[in-house]
Image (cartoon, rainbow, N blue to C red):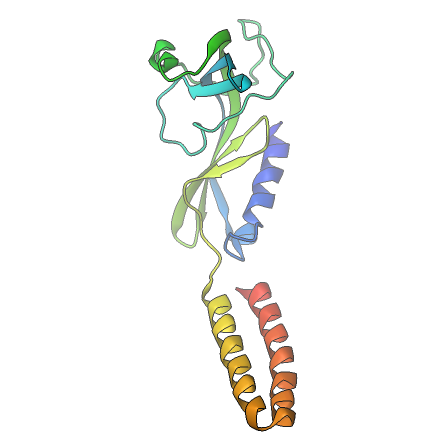
Length: 200
């Protein structure tokens, strides 16, 4: 994945349904770093078949770097002739044996693998946030992000419940009146849902 692809991934992520409604247009990228991050890959024979486990080879608190997955058939030999395109190469600071006691089964293969990632900092309404984009899978990891406001949905749900409960009580004495109440309530709820989804 090149930088243009990664920027597209970030743009689509900001437009996600769980993020703030205007994050896609209001987020301002403040930093953009292309990095090769080191991990240990362990291929093991276990009771459940072959497993591939990935552990960081460098101490980090960045989100997602403990959940990376090595893609099958997409590994390139890393040597002095490898073109990393100017991306920063992070050196390992954890020894491989630090993970050995936690591994299941019998060893088949183990290697040091450099993962391409993009570390993106962005600002939104006075807050500063950071995401990690996996340059292999396109997966986005974030410890925190501006969430979509949920108050409108809660109010809509409570209002709809009250209106339907009221219509049910009215129906005990006058089914016609209850029908009128529901006929007014349903379009109002549909309009309210559309408004909340579009503006909040």
